[in-house]
Amino acid sequence: MTASRQRWLYGLAWMAWLALVPWWLGLPLLLAIVAALLIPTQRLTSQAPVLRRALRWGLPGVLFALQRSLGGDALAWGMALLGALAGFTLLAGLEAWLDRGQHRRSIALSSATPEWRELALAPIGPGAAIIELQPPDWFDAGVRIVDPRGGEVEWRGDAAHGGRHRFDDGTTVDDAEPRCSFSPDGRWFAAALPQARGIVLLDRDNARQHRLRGWHLYGWHPSQPWLQRAEHEAPLGLKDVLGQGDTNPPP
Image (cartoon, rainbow, N blue to C red; front, side):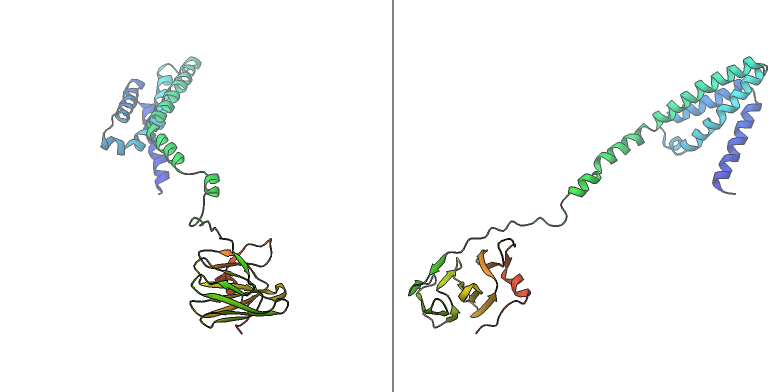
């Protein structure tokens, strides 16, 4: 037998017993149950569900005993119905008062839990860092330009077909226009390719060149080149550009 069926049988037996005994005996029992529910002891609190069911099932039994003691006529049934209305109203008020703490906890939990709108608008993942790019300073090399790390850079060639930038340490950048730029710390040297074909970047610390067709220098951050294909596209760091594989090997 399931627990739910057992509760039904116990409730019916309790109601039938109260209907058979005089109402003046069953009513004090119900009042005693009410008093037990109002006493905040740990033992009685653990039995509160059983006591509540005893009130729900016992009240109809006491009312039936009341109308039976009044003669069982229409007046007796009317008195029993009025008693049922008053009794179940008081019972509902009692249960609402007993559940007041649980209701407050539910309100506190719902207020502490963010709504779906807040969850939808909440940022996900780490906060994005704001990247501020420093615009490049371009130099049109006539004959020589000053190297930020000391010395000068000499350019020789034809502006229409390209030429050579030569540093004092012997490093050269071939097939480039005279228009060039240095990173703020002087590590990177950038020069435009002839006929606006792209740009060549010289990593002076690693003695390595990157010739990038279709890319243009947009700025430096932090002292690293950021490149752009077209004006409507977002600039990318050199690592991202090299990852696309659209580069030419150094000469």
